[in-house]
Length: 594
Image 1: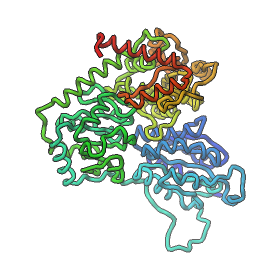
Image 2: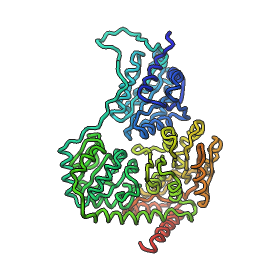
Image 3: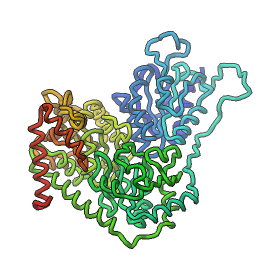
Image 4: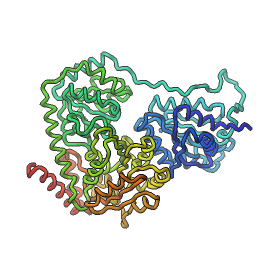
């Protein structure tokens, strides 16, 4: 038997593709692959996690941060099953990820052997490429195909490998060749390029936008690498820019063109602009909540996207431009006629000043219990201008959307389309490895943190100086308010006593941990955590009755909210008190003016 095993062909090919990290958890279904990693440990790192779901989230975060393939590894059966949620995060946010899983020895497949799960069948929906490797001669050729497919289609590829194939001789070719073909021979090269926008589409888009009186731009995650081009087009059109939450870092929040976000987590000026605009330029976004987009026919729409199938998927589009955001905007810019009348833009700048005043009024240190808006504002004030914020889904996303200011080279990442709970911590771990010199802060809820809190120990064991801030309302806050907006009193969304003290877990892991219940202690605790040389965690008890209200509350939403009160909302007095405090704060910031 050769000392060189087939798994080494797999691992060497990952190295050839520039993969420097594999996130995973071992098991007897991947012992051969682990041996391949051991033999190449000087060239590729294996990050041992505490739950496979976290490994998949980390691979997704790696892809989001670098634009390169993220790789996760899990054993057969339950290990592979655990990867799925994180892989769906990659699928729905269009991130290139390779999942490698083990499989039982090929001779016992189909016999009901222990942990025998047909992972290739299980992964059919989540993957763009999905293969059970049955012959050592397929390696490394199918690795190239898998990675190329993930990169070109911006999705998930999956290789599941029986453990006897993993440890076979690397040059084994055990079967007779009966087809006029050789085992796959390939190279670690991907030819991935955006389509070139057609000149006739650029011309048509320019004519439409030049004719608009009240233009608006909706920038999504696909425009993150097109900041300068986006701002140049906004300037030429005199157009305010709305940002989707995954696209929050597309332009700075303090830009003269920024009017904040869209949807339930957005701003009032953003919502009003959507209702008011007569032309909408959508750049790199597949924003799913069509209720928060213009009514069909109310605005003429231009959409730029690298994927032709996504153009026109949310709104009737008059002009579609297939291409990379930065390149397409650069081609469009010379055809735009600069505006001399900036009254449309100036009107929304005034509305944004008012909105910022109102949001600033909610960042009130004097509020008890601690206002989550204040907590987020402290993080915002103390974090560096190139800090990266990762965020869970839930009310924390609302506070981050409105109170985390994109300035300088700051980043912002979350599970955009899957909107999964719990990615904030694993995202932070992966991104701290990618950017060891930057501050990486995970802003998470107690519900999401509780799901994957073991990964704080992972951060400690690898000496990663992430900062975790737990917005602890002892509840599943977002679900609570969603129930009420349907007109139902809350049910089953608040955790029982005792309330968790996650700072004790942080200290038990060897990290910095502090529990905060007094608003006067928030700033010092966050400052100390950010300065700590290793992983740190601040667990902050916030007001559990602070509602993440939409930027613009509609009559029907208010009506159903009131209905929930009438039907016996159990905490209605506390909620009413919090809403009263919010209103008093905002009135104070406007000197009594509405």
